Length: 421
Image 1 (tube, rainbow, N blue to C red):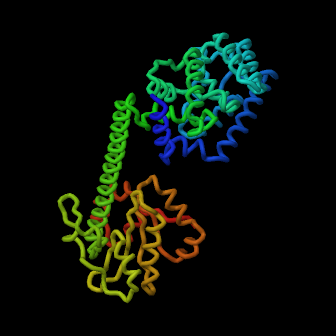
Image 2: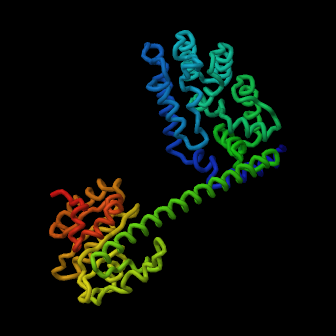
């Protein structure tokens, strides 16, 4: 790619608000904090090896702290820790059980910490490469980048892919030879466009990452970009389908529970009101509109209270006078808190109301229901209200018995679980 085309590419890279350049490289203080923390962590790693306290595993070692700080640096360093995980079956990377290799690794880190010139850093990287420590490849460059950001570019799969696409090369991920050759090309190319990027090689590495991750289009990665976009669209579609299926399942279960409450209420010879936005539903071939009364009995309620109460899932009414004897909020996954507030609004709006209130929810939500009812505000506000919890499972299993043997709404006490205290 000629210089003009590269400058145009850099312009697109920098103008994208979601690019690595804008989300990581130029975000300022947080990135600079990482440099300080990682340098300190490298120093601790060296000290631990020298003092014999480093351990024989990545987990729990000061090296893990270093790599954790690196991987927190946005998506460009995602996966940077993987090459350093101790793989017992392969005995790699061989810096945990092999004491000689561990000491060579410490010497390398120490030399890079104290180096002040490019030739010193490159010499140390070549020494480490020549040591042929099994499983320890140029991934260490991502550590050294945070010690010498103008001399050493970081290194990962996406960056190698981006490099190969941009420069029509075939560099290998785990090869020190490939990395050192890449480094020379990156330094040379970055120097030619430095006024458009930065002396800090993280900016150019981010550009390679965007190309390699198929987020920045060039002719050489057009197919990869199209494939990435297709995968992204497929993922969105799968997630949406999953959400739709979950919503349908949830709505279906909510409807089934409402139907059970309608069935039980009618069997106990009550008139039944169902939430005004649910009257068009059907369950098992039965229309809610045909099983329930169309409206709540006239009350002298403020409009906002009427709006709230009319959305209560199921209400049982005494025939003739329209007295409310029981009200039910069905909460499959929606807010328990809002359900309680609707029931409270109902009771507080009717002077002397002594109707029974029920939260009907999956068994798994019992602790959540009880925790909400135990909130200090609810304990005080609802102390004189009859409010209990009915699990879905108990309602289903007891429905026929409640219909057959129940004489009035008090039969629900057989399956309801009351709040403590």
